[in-house]
Image 1 (cartoon, rainbow over the protein chains, first blue to last red):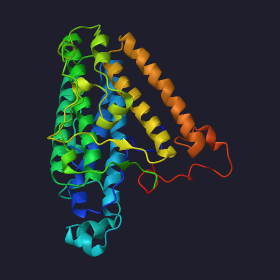
Image 2: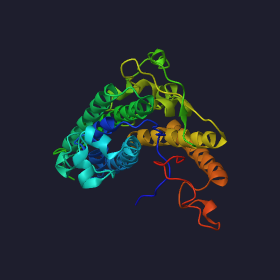
Image 3: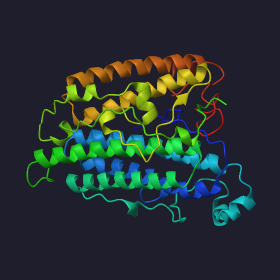
Image 4: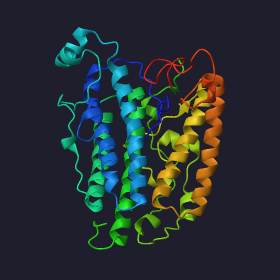
Amino acid sequence: MWAYEKRLQYPVNIKKKDIRMAKFLVTQYGGSNGEMAAALRYLNQRYTMPDNRGKALLTDIGTEELAHIEMISTMIYQLVKDASVEELLEAGLGSHYAEHNRALYPTDANGVPFTVAYFATTGDPLADLSEDMAAEQKARAVYENLIDLTDDPDVIAPLLWLRQREIVHYQRFKELFEYYQNNLPQPRNKK
Amino acid sequence: MNNFNFEEFTYEDMMPFNNVTLPNMDMLQNPSDNQMNSSNMQTANLATPNQAYVQGNLFNNLYQGYKNYRPFPLVARNEQEQAFLNYSQLAFAAHEVNLYLDNYPNDRSMIRLYNDYRVATLEAQRAYEQKYGPITVMSDTLNNFPWLWQEQNFPWDEGGM
């Protein structure tokens, strides 16, 4: 089970409205390489990891990704909360307003709703961990794209921080991948 | 306004992050070592909890900057922010060691470090909650009237943490 902590893992305090940036940033909420996809991917894959080492790592990183969903959501919320309908229209979020007003909705930057088709589960730990490593690298790349799209330090600071987490998670998944590669009996994915 | 205030930012500030020790990837490239006894190398490359929290990475040898950005210093503007920062950075350091230990469960010195951070985190959490209100619903401070859980703003709202 999970217990909530009423705090962000890293502080977010955006003072300047930026609707266009919110429109881009939403991809790390509900896009294919976003935090929601990451959390669900790891928390869904963990059941069939071959030992408690893998179950622990996927649980603990998956849990951290839930906290990242909250950080990204907070950023999007703060970027648009004071926007007028006209401003939302100008930024291309008229259709978002029609469906959701200023509420959050997990989509990618093109407005395509979140889907679990963004991740896989094969039951093979090496295949699943390879996907997880790729997911961390793709999320890192998207964070870099997003950093390039803004000059607001209140936005850049948490994006740099989240980007760094992708690097650490990638490393941990890679270590686990190599451990399984060297230690699992053949056929390596059979329990 | 209880959130952290990032230090005044200018583009001149965006210098390469120079607080990083050189990568030492030896143990990471030898995962076939089942014991994974890497404690000496790891502890030598660890950031302080504050530095780790600011850069988002406890392991200096894993740190990779982006372009010429460097991590933004977090400056507490009052006692509450300082208490909160103290808690958050210790919790982060403990979490980083936790992820490491998932892969290297036989690293005695890192287990010791985890427990140092764990105990310090719990103390910092209790200290924060006693003064400023509950972070979790298991907080001792909820033995109060009225119900304190809604007292502090939620993290996405102004004044929230």
